[in-house]
Each structure stands twice: as C-alpha cells, then as structure tokens.
Length: 335
Image (tube, rainbow, N blue to C red; front, side, top):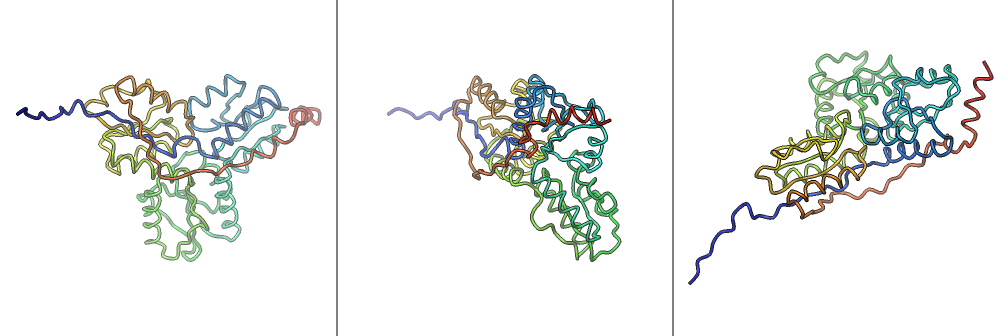
C-alpha cells in the first residue's frame, strides 16, 4: 500500500487577488480627457495649474502631448488658456487668471465642487465650518479659500482639542473627498463629543470612488499576505488605501508608481498578492504589475469585486467654446 505525501507549501498555487473597482474614478477620467480634448481642440500649449491629477505617469503623458504644468496661474503668459485641476481652486485663483488675462477651463471634480458650494452656503448662514482634511493638500486649500473667515482645518482626531468655535449651536463639519472613511468618522465622533450640536453635511463628502476602493482593499487585506497599491506618493486616496489595507489586517502593504518599484523580497513566502490602484491611476500601470507578477509565478488572477461603478461626468462647459483660443488672444488687445 503506497503512502500519501503532503504537498510541499512551495507548490501551493500563487495567485493575485485583483480589486474591483480600482483605478480611474469619474472625476479623474473627466479631468484627463478634458486636457486631451483641449489640446486637440485649441492646440498646444495648454497650461494646467498644478498636476491635473496626482499621478506621475498621467502628468508625463500629457506633457508629451503639449500640456505645461505650472504651480500658479500667475506663471502663465497673458493671452493663454489655463486649466484648473480636479482638486479645485479658491476664488482668488479665478481672480488671478482674470487679472492675468487668461481664459480658464475648470476641471474641478463635481464632487469637490459640491463641497465648495456647501462651504459657501454654510458661511453665508454664518456657521463655523470644521474642514476635516490634510494640511497643505490642494483640495483643502481650494475649499478653505471659499470661506477663509469661517473655515478651520481639523487634521485628524488629535487636532480636535484645539478647535474653538464662536457658537457651539452653529457649527458644521465638511471633509476632503479623498480621506479614509474610518479615520474621518473617528474625527467626527471626537468633534461631536466636544460639540454635541455639530451638524453633518447634507450628504457624505468622501467621494463614492474613495469609499468603494477602500471597501475593496479591506476585502483584499483579509485574503492576501501582501497588498500592492499602484499610485503616486502625493495621491491622498492612494496613500489612504495602503493605510486601510494595514488596518484591515494585511501583513504588508506598499504603494508603487510602477512595477519596477516592487521589491522582489516582498514576495518571499507570499502565495497571495492583493492588487489595487488609486483613483488617479490608469489601468495600463496595473496591467504592467500583473505582467511583472506573472513572470514570477503569480499567474492565477482572481477578481475581488465589491461594487459596480457607472457614474460619469460631462466635460467642462468651456470645452464647448470653439473660439476659446481666439478669445484668449483677444484679451491681449484689450490692454
């Protein structure tokens, strides 16, 4: 009678758990297409204030097509077209563009615009607005600029102790759209403890895509020994996905821009790799990681789907103006 031998652990199938949804959200898709359409319609150069979205590959690709990224609208030569990024800008930036004799295309994500409008409305009603977000992030700077006298930033639960308001019965919280849902609610709970009459915004500010990608990464974290998130270091939502994976129990989680940044040592003893990407990441970068992993034996790819996404946004209305380039040039004649 033959004896049975156990299959060595090394022969276990290596697999990739691929998150769905992942990658581009509707706001990013709209912003990137807006730059491409503007270049097609009006010709190069199209100036873009700040990175259109926080992704190195996307920015480099658009630069090759003729986009010029600048830190401030004041750097753009008069008589040109400048586009505002998906993260939104303060009213002062619109004014800088007007004074600088520039025509603008506003590619702010509609979900960020919603937060801006909420800020203006609550400021008009004389509320103190507590904006939960990360100091220095472009979206936070843009939202704060809508009502600087009424908004104070709360950068996580540890910041709550120093918050002071004029009237505890007239205080509302708003949020940066790309935060971790769990971390935001922790901050909200701490604020509510301090200000029991704190009002919540009419709808959650954290965008649907951020929430969906965090839900999917939590699912991956329970099944994978290693989680890889494709995204840039300056992408808030990508960074949060790594944090969420670790908090949900992933033994290891890393953020990479490209497959070439993966350290082979991370794969030691790992049979299941979870893979996802931030909301500003084109899927070609995820496919490159899948190819890199398959060359190292991770050929079995299993989709882990936690939501369907069908939302799309129409392109900025300024792109319907066929004469925008001519109108920009005409601004120089009106000096």
